[in-house]
Image 1 (cartoon, rainbow, N blue to C red):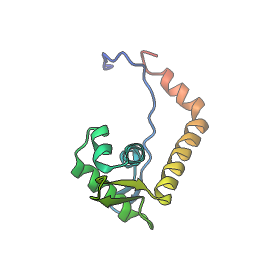
Image 2: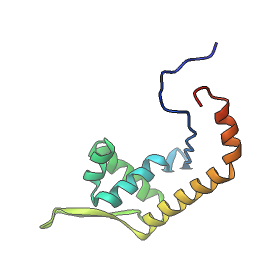
Image 3: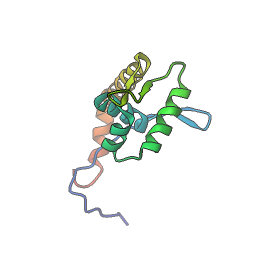
Image 4: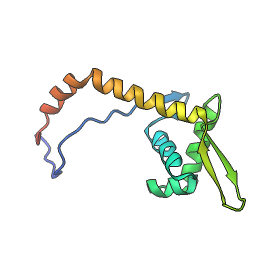
Length: 124
């Protein structure tokens, strides 16, 4: 028996690419969103707030990402007259650029098949 949904939004396909290294998700959609938020807000604290996550969780994700890469993606300065902050390194910028480029290419390459799949879902 088909399940019914009450969602008003039409169905969509979300690609969720992950780079794993052992048991660790080195790069994934959550870490990419966090990098984009750090870039936009200039601090891990503000980035975490903008994503509705705790500072502790954001710090753990940034630390895990930094340890997973050959070169850290985010650097932070503590204290100071302006309270410190965080910025993406060139490696962090490159991770973002590559991740989003791969995502865009995958969506473009699979567009016809994704449209066929979505056509099979009610509410379209």
